Image 1 (cartoon, rainbow, N blue to C red):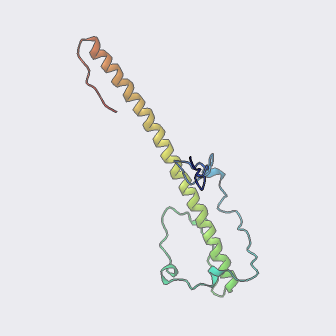
Image 2 (image 1 turned 135 degrees about the horizontal axis):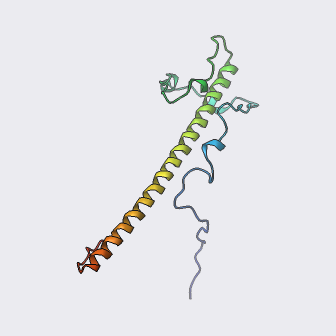
Image 3 (image 1 turned 180 degrees about the vertical axis):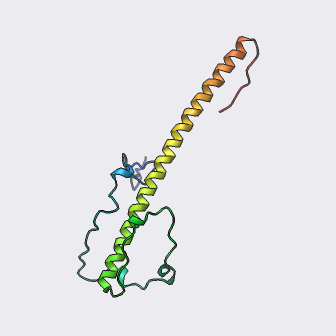
Length: 148
């Protein structure tokens, strides 16, 4: 007598080569950096905003030369309210996330382009190898065997 297993295996298939991005997405289709940020309407302060900021994050990191000056936010006035400081920090984070997504997509597209070029090069060399092997055979010379 055979028994059925107590549980059924998951039938959901996962992609073996997940990229972390959506299909057919390029940097031009992303939200522009100057697009407005959605306002937050919390009834109570968020749990994150209640936490103390670690000293490591309080120090400003050095600006890289890649960042455009036009993408930077205007600095807050010295007498800004706590609400204005929170909104400014949120806007900075939104811009940083948008830039990061754009960099990631551009890097992925660069890798895909390089991969396609390398695949074409492999095909070219394989064809050349086949032609040379045939030439050697036609002259009665046994061609070397290559293992893939």
